[in-house]
Image (tube, rainbow, N blue to C red; front, side, top):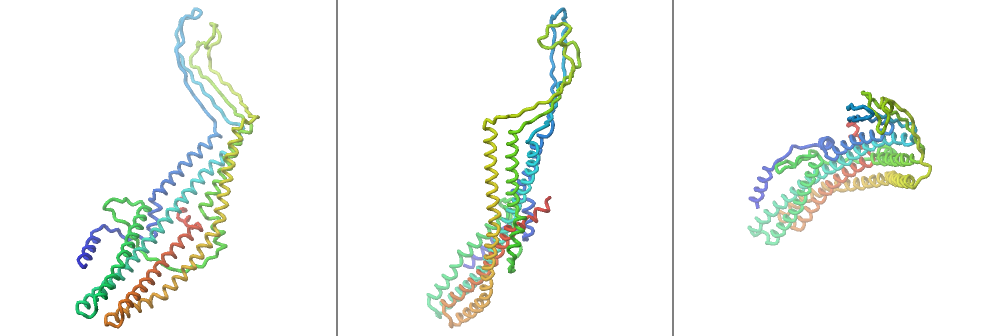
Length: 435
């Protein structure tokens, strides 16, 4: 048994270890390197390009081409062959178009949507990293508590073995002590696996290169517990103004409304002014199809005018597209209403959870000292034969339960606080430093 334990310690000592990292360090690294956040930043740049496309409806359309060719042959006594080339350009400027105002607004909303999507990605990734940090700390402490408990049980097993060899107790006492010690083995291993899983999630959130010899991040800190009293009505009102997902939902409603207006612009007349011109650097070039020797020569010219169009009868194309866009807007409005209505319920639920966890923490905190003193007294009496193995087992089990319960209450308290910050929209403070 001791040789196996020494081997396990040796194997753990040669594994790569990373220096401890605090919660602030985890959040800062996640904000800087997380791939989901980096993708959202790229999408913000892409939205600026889409805004430029939407704004292009306002700007003039300019085209220039340069035709060239050769003209010659026997024509009314002329046998000269001429190489020619000229520049042809056109300039078109929209004058009346009902789609221009909503297109400009839609371009601005497009960038605002991308900004809020970036903020939402930041909030989600920071929240996930924070929960992973709390989980890693919780399972690390749980491993420590269960390891300490197993060490006590191993010491009791060794003591009962010595007493059995001396003939002071029967074999059943030694067997019971052995079973008690081995019952904790799967619990310790489960905590170790959960700790490793939380470390792996932290590494993913922080975009750490997970190579075969890479060290997983080690959380530095403890789970704190501080009861919190909140004003539910004030927090609900602030959350409605601060929540990133609610801001995004409102922007999606605005975007759908502008899309509907852009499509409905097909109902209204439009007009555009145009200027076209040809520049001919050579002379003596006849127009195509001309028969005159001295007339119909091509020359430089400029033409200007305006075009006006109005589709009076809708064939269903515009109307159908408008109805489709209107349904999208109505769906977005319903989703926004659902989000706004859920804020108060979620905050009330989390407040109740915090109150329950607070009561649970007080209960375990009050019983921890008593359970520890009882376990120590029973262990001393067991060595002198004044206590049974069953009493020792119950005392150690109660001690482990109170320690684990106190630790779990602190963990759930921190998780509830993280959920409270997410529900009230406080994670946005991290995104403000990026703009």
